[in-house]
Length: 97
Image (tube, rainbow, N blue to C red):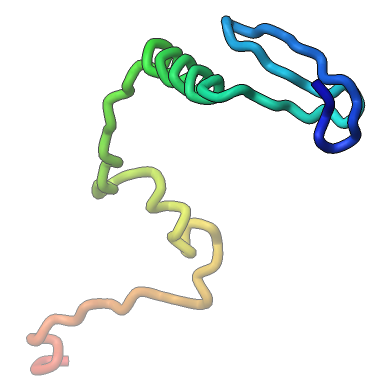
């Protein structure tokens, strides 16, 4: 058989029971009728055998006290921008102050 691209003689090779015709010049691959279906079926069966299904785990919601909260705390990193907490005053201090 001749290659449709460059008219070189095709070489026949057998892989896993499927005959594959390929061109050594342009490296093109040609399959006979039904051979692609065989390749797909074998790949599909190997994939289902070898790939165990991993259980899906939902990501955990952040909890109060997680360490990640410190990444977003500017005062812990030294960027307080002059912030000072207000002193809470007592209402009696306003009367007798």
